[in-house]
Amino acid sequence: MALVPALPKRFHGPSVWALYALGFIPAAWAFYLGATGQLPGNAVKEFEHLLGLWALRFLVATLTITPLRDLVGLNWLRYRRALGLLAFYYVLMHFLAYMLLDQMLRIPTILADIARRPFITIGMAALVMLIPLALTSNNWSIRKLGQRWNKLHRLAYVIAAAGALHFAMAVKVVGLEQMLYIFLVSLLLAWRAVRTPFLRWKRQRTAVVRSSPATQKAAG
Amino acid sequence: MPAYRPPEIPASEITPERFFLDRRSFLAAAGGLALGGTSVAHAAALKVTSSPYKVNETLTPEKDVTSYNNFYEFGTGKADPAANSGSFKPTPWTVKVDGLVGKPREFGLDELLAFPLEERIYRMRCVEAWSMVIPWDGFPLSTLLDKVEPLGSAKYVAFETVVRPEEMPGQSGYFQPLPWPYQEGLRLDEARHPLTILAVGLYGKTLPNQNGAPMRLVVPWKYGFKGIKSIVRISLTETAPPCTWNLAAPDEYGFYANVNPAVDHPRWSQATENRIGEGGFFGSNRRDTLAFNGYADDVAGLYAGMDLRVNF
Image (cartoon, rainbow over all chains, first blue to last red; front, side):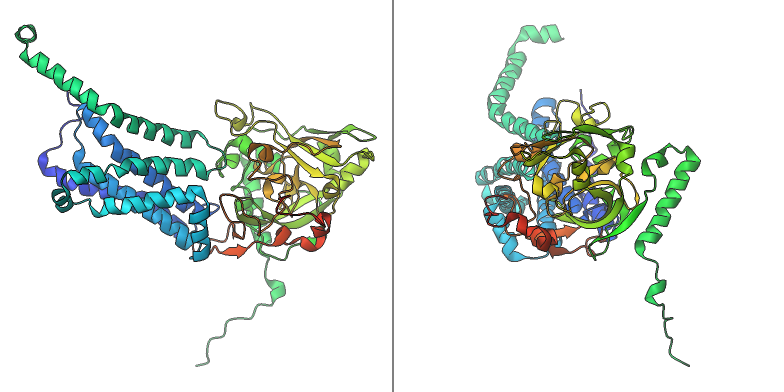
């Protein structure tokens, strides 16, 4: 029945920390290669794009946790905070790489870019929206905010859509890779729209199955 | 104890970087020969004379010139052309020159390589805000045009890239980034300008496939996408010819596409550029982009009286 064998409870905490450690490997490795002149061609752009791409991957992974639980009964909720925070750190590093390494702190150019170029405006908006989510990604905030926490964290949907759009608008020709992320994010957001009716239907079905003695006998 | 003094090496004894880099490519070529030999056929040494058209700036290392390319026929990634162009066959090759000319005809590659070849060290500024300094080997486009005797009615020159889906992976499959063939065009006076060349080599050797083998256009005062690669047809026309990027996104890529730091691309500034191959994060630096890519003295006159914001 179980898709993957259940992880013993004592490994739950360490596995989350392992995820953080693994999650930072792409950035650390690319930074090492770039700083030592081993990234080919345009090292700064390569680094910048790699950080952006991993940010988008972590955003998609964050949004996959819920459908995984709904559809295949796999409860990886314990990894969602780490995935979301990794997405935030990668978006932040992506922006810092653009600001420090690419534009070399040419502030007027950066401000003009953010104001005038729609794909940068959208990317910047996503980073700004991620800040309150990152700041409230802790148990204390969840307790304190209650239902409002859930509402606030629905911003993740807008952020993922903005990220996929930013990626597609940044390239000269929208290719397979950009379409893949637009497709994945669309699919994950569409799931949120049909999720409530689906769960209601699933609950009803389970209830019917449980209350019907005929099925119990048949099952027995 | 006397203070240590570093030995003084006269400038005349310092080997220029391109020669010791050439040694490396020579060794690589020799290695290829030893291992089977076919690869060197595509990197044959060319006989070139030097020319006064030389930029006095550090050359972009050959490995960067041949591994960081935009050539969508082989894929849209910068490393794709080098990775995916291995089965492309630049020989034999013919270029058809026709249209409004007195003597339309085809030129074989041997004939093109027999033109007096010059080394031209040009800046190359990509529309994506990066740049290189490349030692091209080629001949002025006007040399070729003279052979076909353009008619008085000819006002433009149209260029076309080869279409070979079986050898160019970007030209086959479901997601093709652009319509083929890739097309470009110049005004006849731009095409006849002495800076405009057809390159058949770089770094003293025949062009690698990823750089547009066997022959490509180089117009150093224009953005790189004007430099159409692997040319099979050149036609003289009366009206402005279609240009691939201009048709794909007319608000982003103009017909002229002259390098102009004052006119931004809608998605990025063109005021500065990133020079490729200057090391890692901390070796690279952004430099100011020059009007007409630094060739304003030679070519600004071609556009006298034109509004370059409109005719970008």
